[in-house]
Amino acid sequence: MGKPAHSLKPSREKPEAALEFFDRALTLLQKLRRTQAGVIQQAADLCADRIARGGLIFLFGNGHSRMLCEEMTPRQGCFPGFVALVELALSNHAAIVGANGLRAPLYLENYEGYAEQILRGFRFGKDDAFIVVSTSGIRPVVVEMAMGARKRGLPVIAILSKAHCEQAEAAHSSGNKLIDCADIVIDNQCPPGDCVLPLTGLDWPTGPASTITGAMIINMIRCATAEGLLRRGSIPTLLPSHQFVDNSNAAEQLELFYEAYRKSLVHLFK
Image (cartoon, rainbow, N blue to C red; front, side, top):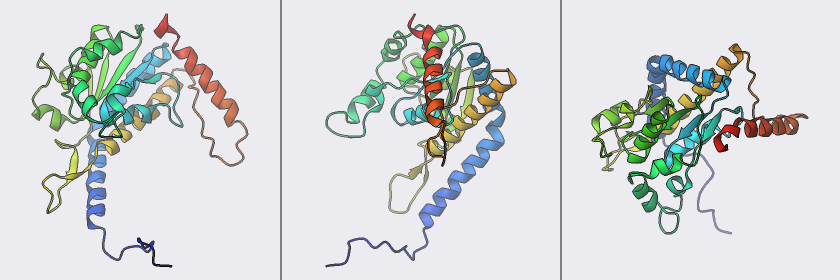
């Protein structure tokens, strides 16, 4: 038999690009901690207050940003009160070309009026709120989602790159960007274009970092919200992990989570 095409032995070459990306991402996380901890706590306080009163916190992001919505829920350690508002027409593009490819979602996210049609599918309550995720913060669908939420009296938390959003031109006909339509703005610290690593020989940088800083923001909000609920005397029902050895009550806890989540959605469809 011939030798395998790829050796499993580690390369002797120093992974300079890999380590450089790691260092740059870590620098962004450290800056996030230093500059955004207070506003993240402010966002979590809002979430805890609304959830404790029976409200729901909706998370919306189109394209890759939908991953951060799903990082909040459903995820081990999540709890009722957060709802990932994932519109598949804007997010299901892994095929890239052909059916369910990338062209259609990129077109739809610029189509004015689409977000309002999504919002009309629900009866939001007075204690609900929104988290809208978009690194650029300029696409019409995210701008209109934030505008539509505020029109309904719901506060909006935005997770975006201030550097990108402030420098980019507005794409919505109103001239608004997401940063203009939010009550609380959390800066994910990413540079314009998201990617942090230029390499000689490439015309464009690589190494997007918004998933890393965004996931940290989401989990900081989740943990601080849980803490806030406990302070308010409201014990959240957590989605358990089934991976613990000798865990005999995970299945029971899962059923408790399903039921608590179902009950949390009641007011949306009245």
